[in-house]
Image (cartoon, rainbow, N blue to C red; front, side, top):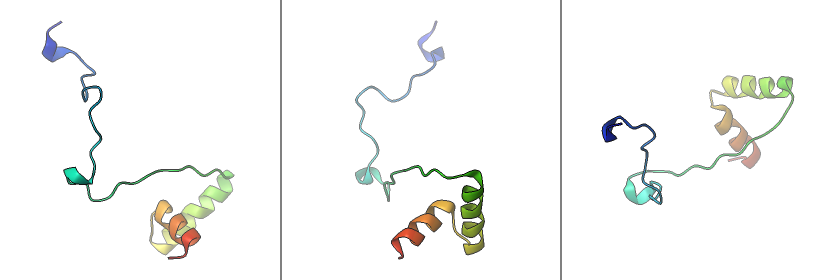
Length: 65
């Protein structure tokens, strides 16, 4: 198969992740929360009512910024 038609040719192994030195403004981390479907739906409703994303709502509510 010709080289240009091969699939899965992403970054070379060992390539560094993009960081702030390459122009990225903020680096985020993720976490997961668990709750019943009703609890998660309520969080989504509260976030929407506050005009915020679910992530921003949870973070600002817990940290109280």
